[in-house]
Length: 157
Image 1 (tube, one colour):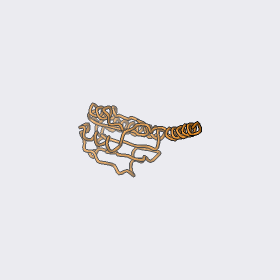
Image 2 (image 1 turned 135 degrees about the vertical axis):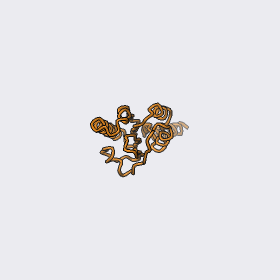
Image 3 (image 1 turned 90 degrees about the vertical axis):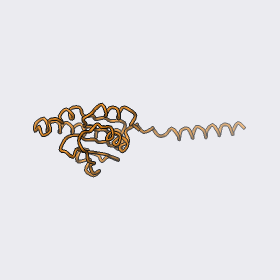
């Protein structure tokens, strides 16, 4: 009986070790769900068009290819846009966040110099760039209260 108890205890320890072997994935934003919620929120005043997935890295200046991405840009030559990127890991997401911030800075500097759409300059200056786990979110919109309601209101996975 003692051998059976020891054997069962050993099997239980092995089972527990197997279950705890993987670290849980960091929570992030689901690209499709979050994009839909943001598009439906009324945050955007310009018509947006979805960018082809193969154009995303070059458009945002990413070094690594996202594992999933949803990107919308303005059809009216404005700066409103939406991007939700899922990267391979948190390190790649941090690099993507830096690239996205540089993308916004470049657009802000261009608009400051050119004044092509000066009404978009405040939108660019208030752009939301966030990293959550292995995801990165970029939002350049007219209504940042609506953006906050979506991003802070439980749209994270």
